Each structure stands twice: as structure tokens, then as C-alpha cells.
Image 1 (cartoon, helix red, strand yellow):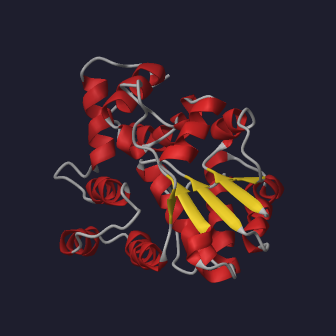
Image 2 (cartoon, helix red, strand yellow; image 1 turned 90 degrees about the vertical axis):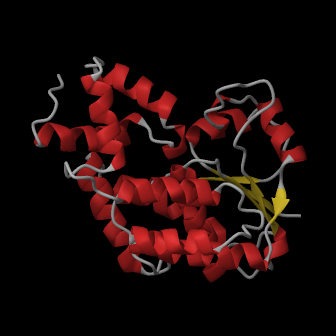
Length: 263
């Protein structure tokens, strides 16, 4: 049996190497939680748009983006008998998960029951669970054995609708869809992540979105260094799953608006 594990990042990959789980590995290295997106993920224009944004925003060479983020995705079109998706509860992972499911729906010949999801929002004995990157190989195997769920046609239908609305970036339409739906299949973490996205999309009277306002509040409370701000944001808003480079995007907007000063 040919098995593929799609991992949510390199931090998970390091621990995954300690497991006894068989199969090939594909490390997902995109961040669909940030930057421009279009609906047709199978088009060359989609990936060209992503490449331009990633390279401009993070000073990455186009060749490196192609090598690290795009080329590995060719595995999704190979004839695997089983594909396991390892994605977490936060918006960062849920947006990427929707992208992967959209790609699989368009490119794979497998029937949905051959695709599985491992999506933890907690772990026994860990009060402030941040993600799979903090787990060791034995703990990842525990997740595989205990929370892995098969994805069926209903799950892919939900994901397809969510992807379209997420890409559209219309908070009201997304909220209406979330409120009208009560069945989420095996996608247990999707609604909370999309709720967080709605908060991010809306702009307050001070022309700030929820993340910008939260970071400004942290700064005004007395946390003036990037490290301090990162830590407070991660503690308060784990649902966004943002790394320091992503938080920096929002901090820079506050700097540009002359609302904060950072070294």
C-alpha cells in the first residue's frame, strides 16, 4: 500500500521522523491564511499570484518558492492508496487544509474514503496545546491511532463551499453560511477558524481589523518589544496560528499608521 502523509509544516516533520508510521512525506509550506488567493487552485495564475506575494513579502527567491512550496505538491497527483492530512485547529492550518482538499478534489483519482484527517485541538496532559510541532513521535502516533477520521463526500462538499467563501473574503457571506450550517462532518475545527477569520475581515471605527487592534492593545498595555508582543498574542489568540513573520505583517501596518514604534 502506498501511503502519503501531508504534514502542516517542518516543525511537525522533525517529530514525525521519530514515529514508526510508514509512508512518504509532503511538507506543506504555504500560508493560505495570509495574502491574496483566487478560487481556482489548479490554475497557473493562482500559483503565480502566490509566488509574487510570498517573494515580495518575505524576500524569498522565486526559485526557492518553486522548490520548497510548489514542486512537492506534485505528490498529490500520484497514485497513493491512502493520504493522511495532518492539520491543526487554527486558522493558519484550516485555510491550508481547505487548499489541500481543494487540490485533492481536482487532481486525485482516489475516492474520498482513502483520505484521512488528523486534526487535534488539544492533547491529553497539555493544558496550553499550541500544535503538533510541540509533540514527539510517540505523541503523534497517539493522534494517528486515536483521532484519525476518514473524509467522505460530505466533508469535501463542505470544504469546497468553505474554500469559495474564504477566498471571496466577504465577512457577511461567510457568517451567513456558518450560521445556516450545523453539520460539519469530520471538519470539527473549521467553524471556529472561520469565525476567527470573520473577526479579522471586519474593520472597526479606528480603521483596524481585530488582529491589528489586539496587537495595539498589547502594545499599549506596556509590551513594547516584538518578543513580548509575540508571546502575549500567542497566549491570547492561538486560534490564528500565526508565526512571528505573520504577526510582523500586522505590526508593520501599525507602524505605518504611526500607532506604534518598534526597534
